[in-house]
Length: 440
Image 1: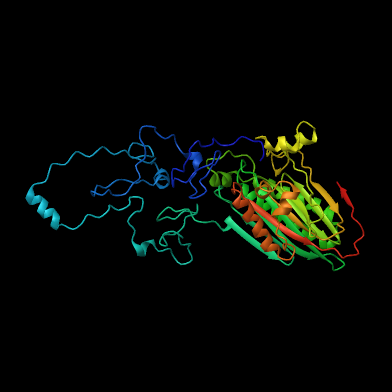
Image 2 (image 1 turned 30 degrees about the vertical axis):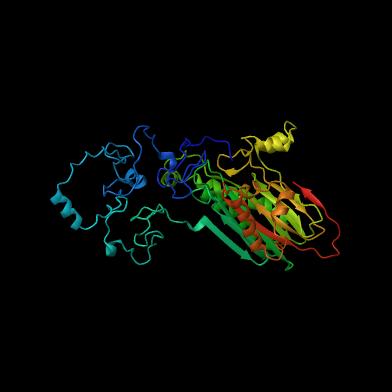
């Protein structure tokens, strides 16, 4: 990711809200959305008590950290901490025989109500017509932050998992297993060239997590690049030039987000307010050509339909690791094993260095599959051979299914990042005349 100052990372091993395991560097809980950047230090001698009623009927306390910490002027427990501390109950005197007999006839004790769940009038809690209902308690309405106003449960977001199939192109994007939201985005489309022949487009963007509003950056870039291509290709602009112009249009769209500081604070109150940023990679299939363009470390792979032919990676990362390899200072294995490997050296955003869109034109001489993806996928299939092995044999016939399988491959590998992949089957007639490529 981009080398920039990050918020202080949590050293907790479990989420304070739901006790799900955390990974080093997590800024939010992937299960409940708890904002870990706002977690105060946990007192070592006052552990949180989180149990239900014991066998002898003694009530014990649970505490909803997220909701209490967000109350105006409140910070959690009675002493201003996020924990409750209970004094040990005084030992009870031995009951008399009469008291014991009366106790035997009394109804069995019931567990105390869970204090995390406030008493709610079912009628009053019912969301008004058109309001979103909580998926957990089915009673409360969902606030603008995506949490239930009744039970506090984090709601799934629309972008957590997205799929689209359009003719011969398909894309799938998933939040992954560790991130609290999906910061990737994509756009797929088809249009026609002036001669009536088809053109197929796939754009994939990866938000830079250390920047503000990375999800908005990736969405703006994908949409702007796609719209630019749908406008320029039918006019007769050469596909490689059209890709270059589309990347510039995407950069302008992301730059415009930096002009909204108030909105930035509203969305990321605990984040450093550096400019929104993302990477971009895209492919165009038009007129027998395959055009690839990118800025950042998202990639394009070529997987031949005939698997006896070698696959290939068609992009070079704008990253620290790629620079080390290009300079001859490290081999690829050493560079990508370094903790700085994924520090990107090129991105779209107002604080980017000189923007240098990369575009390449190929004329394949055989049919194959174009794989356009973020590092959330290629981290689990880095080499061209590994990517080809992960692609289903029938992906050129079922691109949506193939994209679903590749996302599943990343999730099975750990799903530590958002995962986005688009597949474009590239068909070549048997009399194809050789291959050629050019680079700008």
